Image (cartoon, rainbow, N blue to C red; front, top):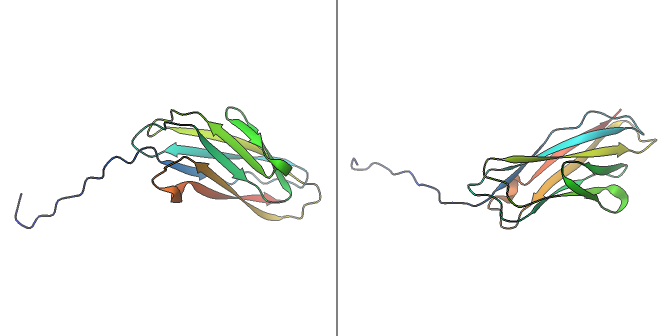
Amino acid sequence: MALGAATAAVPGPCGPDLRVAVADPPPASAGGTTTVHAVVTNTGDTTTLGPFTLVVHLPPGVVGTGLAPAVCSTGPFGHTVTCTFPAGLAAGDSVAADVRLGVASGMDPGTLDGTVEADQPADPTPADNSARFAIVVR
């Protein structure tokens, strides 16, 4: 090695690290439905050892229902949908959850915000565990 040359730090193992991505769903009319598609990717260097959840938070006037293949449950009033995934998401792999959104009748046209977040204990970078999406009511 040449004198004065810097050595690059080699990062150590970080374990499983979940990252959430979500696209805005297609617009919906008042009284209609649309579907939000959320993806969780393990960007870490090891497989998830335990189950993890993906939670979709919806604004007032919108209710959700989880669709297969994820195992999802709808919270009170339908504004929260929680999808549970089993352990075993390998490094670099992704899983998806689709949540059908029902827009209340009589909603004024506009844009409503929702959030998707993943929960994995001891995630080393929780800043990328959530994402926002917009629901356009036409």
